[in-house]
Length: 249
Image 1 (tube, rainbow, N blue to C red):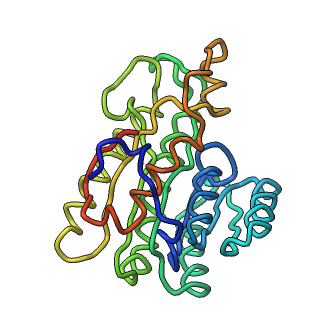
Image 2 (cartoon, one colour):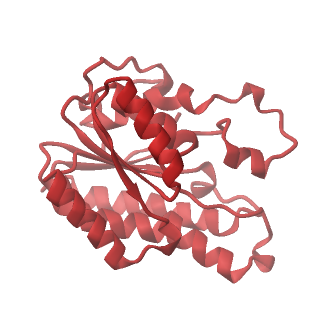
C-alpha cells in the first residue's frame, strides 16, 4: 500500500468498465469523488436526495464525454429495508453486477452532550450513518459477488475510532461502521473477492464542516478534490490486496 494516499497517481483508465455506486453523491466529498471516478472511466451510480444537484452533476459528466452516470434519487433518512431491496433490484436489472460501493452519505446534527441528545436526532443519525450502509450492502452483496473484484469503502471519521465529547450518535454510528468493516472483511476474505475498508478523510473544506465549525479558518484544510486520489486508489485494481483496513488520508 502506498504511504500517502493523497499522492496516488491514477492512470486515466484505472476504472474503465467498472460500475460503482456512491451515496451522498450530490455535494462535498461525494460529488468530487463521483467526478473522479467518472473521469477515470467508471460508470457511476449517483445516489442522493437532491435531484437538482444530481442532474447538474450528470450534465457535467456527460459534457466531459465521460461514461454516462445513473441517477438514483433517495432520501436515506426515509429509506427502509424494502427501499434497499428495490435499489438492488434496479441495479441488477440495469447493470447485472456492481464493482464498487462507496458509502459516503452522512447526517450530523449540532454537537451536544449525550445527556442532552434528542432522541429523534439520535435515531436519524444511527439510521443514515450505520443501519442503511448495512442494509444496502447486504442487499447488493450478490451483485458485488458477480464482480471479478469488488471494493466496498466506507467514508469514516476519527471520532468513530476514538471517542470525543459531544459527537453523540454520529461518533457511535461510526464506531459501528468500523466494527462492520472488521466483521465483513473477516467473513469474506477467504470465500469472495470482495474487500471492505474504511477511510477517514480528516478535516476537509465542506459545507458540513463549516456548519459544525462556523468560526474556523478552513483555508489550511484540503478541498474535496484534493483527497480524491485516496478514493481512486481504494476503488481500483492497485489496492485489490488491501482489505479490512482502517485508513486515513
